[in-house]
Amino acid sequence: MPKGIPNKRYTGEFKQKVVETMHEERLSYKEAERLFELPHNRAASWERIYLEEGPEGLYVERRGRASAASGTKKGRPPKLDKKVEEDLIAEVQRLRAENAYLKKLNALVSERVRQEKKHK
Image 1 (spheres, one colour):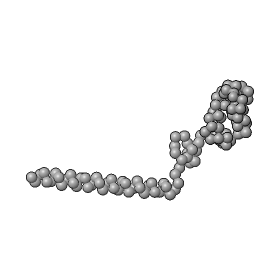
Image 2 (cartoon, helix red, strand yellow; image 1 turned 180 degrees about the vertical axis):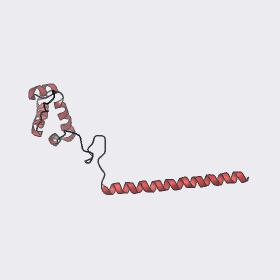
Image 3 (cartoon, rainbow, N blue to C red; image 1 turned 135 degrees about the vertical axis):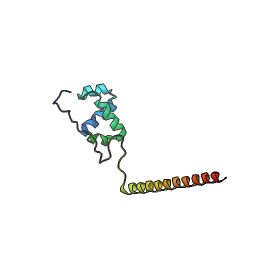
Image 4 (spheres, helix red, strand yellow; image 1 turned 90 degrees about the horizontal axis):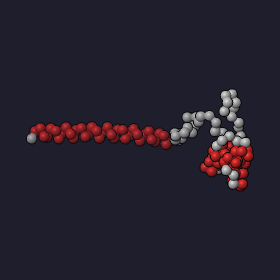
């Protein structure tokens, strides 16, 4: 697309009309894009959203980067509930303490075995 020309925005109603027309009249993506004067692959992406999220998915604004605060960034799971996060942090601390205890116990046992071998 040439510099300085913004992308055209389409309403959720229009997107839904395009996808439902494609289904009712059994149009290919190319035919639908030609009929509704859409850019290449636009109908395919709208149909994917329609099938995955339903018609209401077409009404969601998807422009720009997803914010990290909302947890909607691609590849990143959404933020956890505060209580769940606190429970997980407490469990990690408990497991670290347990791990440190077991390492120390292992070192003491190894030292005792070494001492016993030395005295034999």
